[in-house]
Image: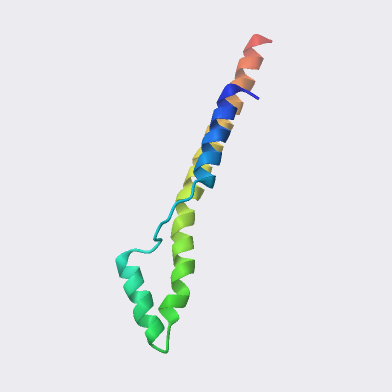
Length: 86
């Protein structure tokens, strides 16, 4: 493995396995959930987690698309360099 890959793997392992306490909800979301749990309806509380997951997934999709574009362009550049060398 190259040195760069080893460094990236070490950084990813440190980030993934580092214990971090975090509150995932903002103050407004917490108030909405707490008020709806006390009510009998609770529809907002049930739909809050899927909404958070949906909002969280969009940046990852954009980054994945940009990584795919970068990969495709690098692959085309390497193919062009091989064609010029031949």
